[in-house]
Length: 104
Image (cartoon, rainbow, N blue to C red; front, side, top):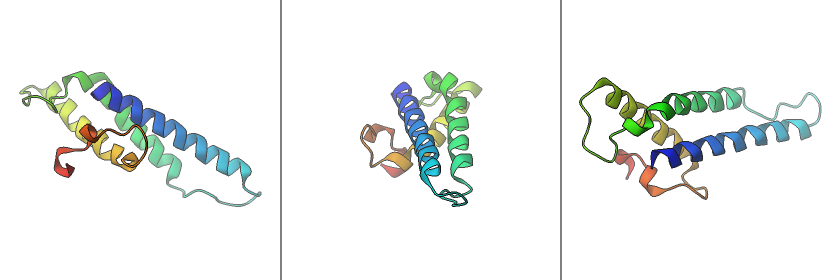
């Protein structure tokens, strides 16, 4: 489940970044077509996703909670990635199982 979530979020971030570049390149000179926070937000979500990827297999989101630090770290990052993925909940490929428990 978590590998699919990571791939989904990374693909959406790549598409968003591509769209920002395309829109910017099509705009007339001296026209600001993006919010100042757009690229930094994409970078922030990507950073959280990248932190989660190596520990995603330890995330106890579908099982009993772990008792060690790594499981807690994975669970916390997993919750963050699932919350950030909510941005894309109405796009093709989003799975209901990724919705954070508090939002199900």
